[in-house]
Image (cartoon, rainbow, N blue to C red; front, side, top):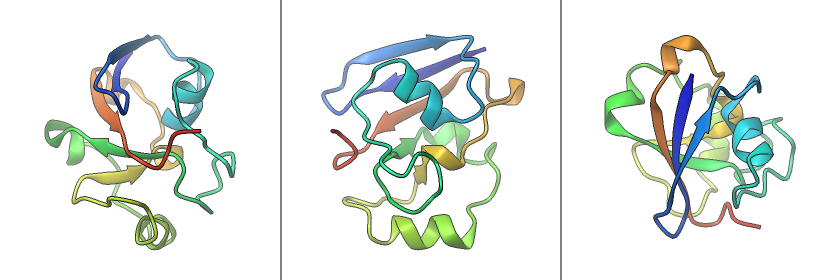
Length: 105
């Protein structure tokens, strides 16, 4: 499995075979610039990412809690998601995301 992550400066990072359960954990464990302050509880927006348009329809629908947290996120867009709520699976092989502003530490 591979996940492609653009950081806030536009640099591309390829995460090969992440063993993590969620995208947030994989990004954090790769040492990328993401705060992920609440550790994956969907109680902050510091793991905010933009999901590439080609992948939006392949994700589970956004839950009410996640939607509410994104309402307070800096620079929310139509393709905004909390990376802690994206569970990695073989169906997401090749997923492309961009770290949103305000998620950096």
